Length: 146
Image 1: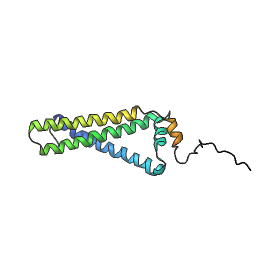
Image 2: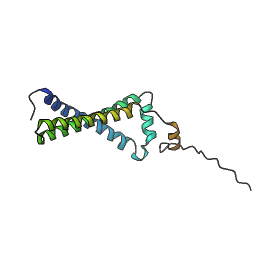
Image 3: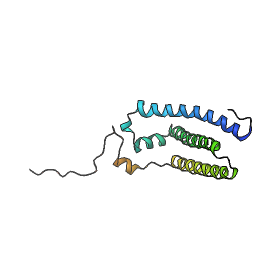
Image 4: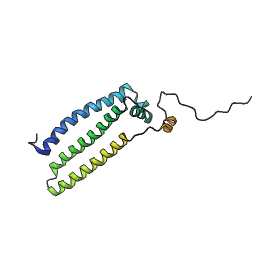
């Protein structure tokens, strides 16, 4: 049932818009990960290349950030709406809402920090290159003496 106004009406609209946006973002993600690229080739180097590429890195970070933020807020707002049907005492609702939005803030903060502050680790990529790329040999091989 559509609320008549206030915060609940905004939350109602948010759930519809974020749900549709998440479907589009997730379908795009699945297309990229499962159709364009083989799942076996996706590792740290793949993500590092995608997020740090000069032309499109910003776009991919925003794409992933939008998925994280919308998924967390959409999911926890849905949980809030469901729990509101079962928790009727105002004091308990305040406690539950505070816990939900605290968890949402922490998860969005952690996800945003990981995506926005990401820096490429060249040494790790050398040790674990993308599959399909040539791997450099780090150990020297002594020639056989015969």
